[in-house]
Image (cartoon, rainbow, N blue to C red; front, side, top):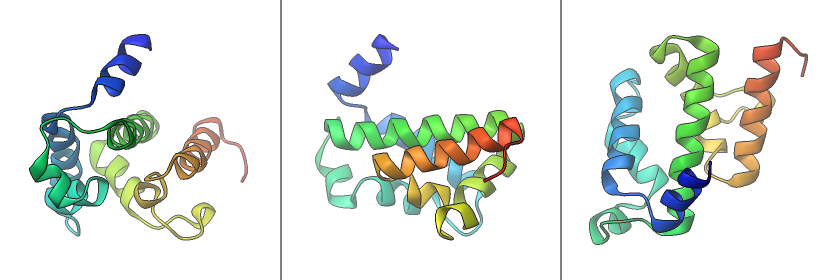
Length: 122
């Protein structure tokens, strides 16, 4: 955990975001990798820097962690991406992806996934 914290604090690279975005884009017909990439980090920022600041790096890490949790729950990467990209009633009909762009939203998505994994009601 400390290693991850140090890597995020030092700033994640463009390749980390590119890998995450392409994974979403490969399994989401309604969103391309660029749509995902530039929703997480503005296009101008992406083009200007080699490493992202702490805030952007934390957002990238949060989306990746929640996607990994969804993948654990659904086992299938296409199903995990669908979960992340589709509106969810427990998130005020926002997608987990959009909701998780903030720290508080990320916590709400994590709770939804955890309840699903453990069969708990909303």
